[in-house]
Length: 464
Image 1 (cartoon, rainbow, N blue to C red):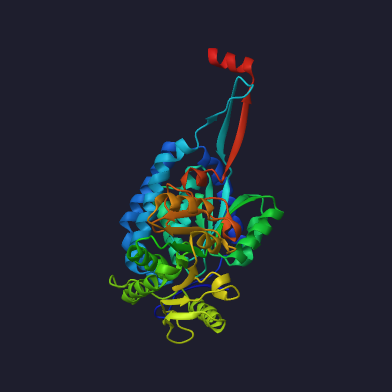
Image 2 (image 1 turned 60 degrees about the horizontal axis):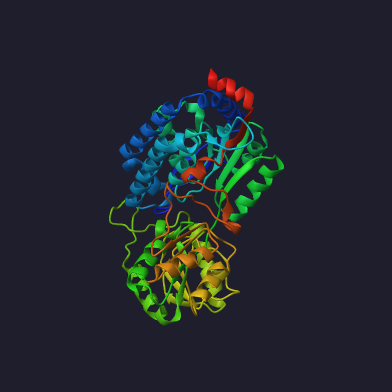
């Protein structure tokens, strides 16, 4: 089947690519496997130079890359430029810090000298989604390449041009072409890649179902995976919070990437005394946001990435309303089969509704009432997901205590949940396992090797 790029705003076909055959895919895998030995033998300084040039190219090409994202998945160009710049920052971050993150770690034992050495493992397969078509890839690629690994990218089939443009950035930066390749393949060839011994590990960002499938196949072939899956992030607002600021931030968080972000706030858990005020203020902020053509700098949110995603979100809303959820803000699709989805708010969200149980991957705010702080934590944890969360309170100590109790990979107190190179990123429960970013992320795909040297040999080595 061909891989096709559609503009979700116009519904027009942009480009059609012939999918790679297994023969071509296997040939690229062989090239990557052979290139891995040479790449891991390069110096830290050489790899850092490539990453810094990639960062410079991302900044230089930010307008072109933003335009591609707008055309292929509907991201407003202002957001697209910000994404390209964030990728550049990530490349620079690892260019500067990777050597320190992976330096030998001395360990006191009965040996003359013992230490942990962090060494590359080879080919890492990345299976990536469409919602942040550059950032999702770079946050895997920058640390993997700096560690001395090589990467194969199986990107979402609706963003092939973004995938190829990022490949070109790395190649133009001086990375040997075989060290990072985009595979224009369908999901049918992923299993064959995972079964091949030359693929040493895999990382996936995507749906719960896709993660379970990849983990099962990789597990059958004894290879490591890192999974960043769905999220239904809680945004807790206590009665002592700055409600005006919380409501403004809540609207921003819910509308990240037109609501299509794993760490966008989705469940707004609000203490009863400030519930009405919060709903009113958040509604005002949502209504003020400007939809439009993603290529227009004035546009604040565009369409969802595909019409079928908007159809599914509409069905989730309708099913929840049928089971008692109350519509606080009317919006949604103008008609079935279209991708533009205006913000909505649902309250009276209760167990048994899809709004309570599922991730809503689009601009629908789900409001739950909490009796007190303890009840808010209970509601936050009553989810099979555990990616991110936010707590808003006027008491910093209380906020930290609640953050420690919430079951998620990250909690931001009085702030917008976001990913950044400095902090590890990932989830618990059905949101996945493993970490990206920070020093933890670069250590996921290395051999953490223990080296023990006897006392006599160590003493001789010291004398020499």
